[in-house]
Image (tube, one colour):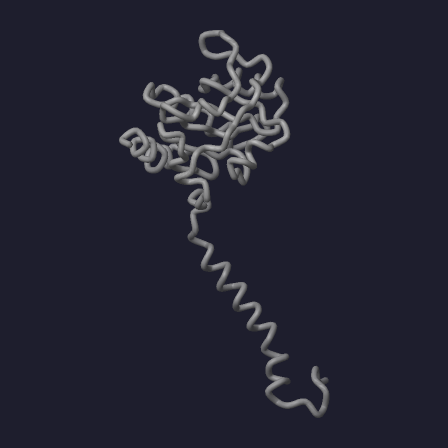
Length: 195
C-alpha cells in the first residue's frame, strides 16, 4: 500500500518514509545530549545582579534558637554580610534530607542563613523546624509563591549565596547534599567571603 499518490515523485515518497526516522533520531540526540547535564547548575539570569527586593512577614510562631520570635525577611537583610538564602517547605521531601546540612552551615559565624518558607502552612513549618532544628536567622512566609518567582526559583529546595554587596553570587537548584556542600556550596561561600 502506497503512502503517497501514484504519480508522486520518488524523492517526495522517500521524504515521507524517512521523516519519522529523522524525527526519532533528533529526539534521541537531544536526550543523549542532556544525559550528563547537572540540573543543579542551571544558570540564573540573576547572578551578579542585586537580590530581589524581598519583604516577607515572619512565619507565625517560629522562634529562633534563643527562644525569641524569628523575624521575617526585609530587603536590607541581603546587604552587609554574606547571606545564604534557602527556599524550603515542610512538604518538600529533599528539604528533609538537607535540613541537617543547613544546621551545619548555620554554625559558620561568618555567614547569615535565612529562609523563604514556600507555599507552606505555618503549623507544618513549625513542626518541620521543631523536628530538625531551626538553622535560620530569619524566615519569610511566601504563601503565594510570589517572592520565589522573583528569585527565579524552579522548585524547592533551592539555595542562593548573596555577597556583602547584596548581589547574588551563586544559585544551587535542588537540595544541598554532603557532596555538593563540600565541593560547591562551601567553595562558593568562600569566594563570596573573599570579595
